[in-house]
Length: 69
Image 1 (cartoon, rainbow, N blue to C red):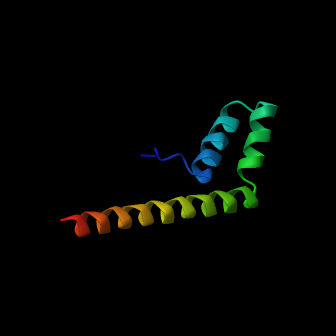
Image 2: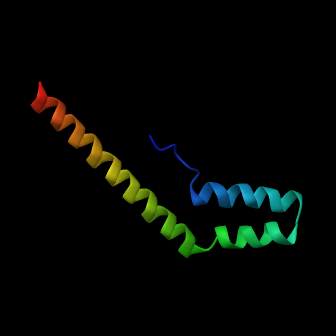
């Protein structure tokens, strides 16, 4: 089973809190990347695809279990 990973929004929010406390230039650069709308869009699309695949595999297993019974 694949463990859930944090969303890009969660990463962005965590980095924002970190930058507020300690405005390190590297952390600020990471925040800017995490806040990029394209990064957020790609993350949502990837997560959606993973969810679709997971549901597909679950349905296949349920179908095999029903047919095997």
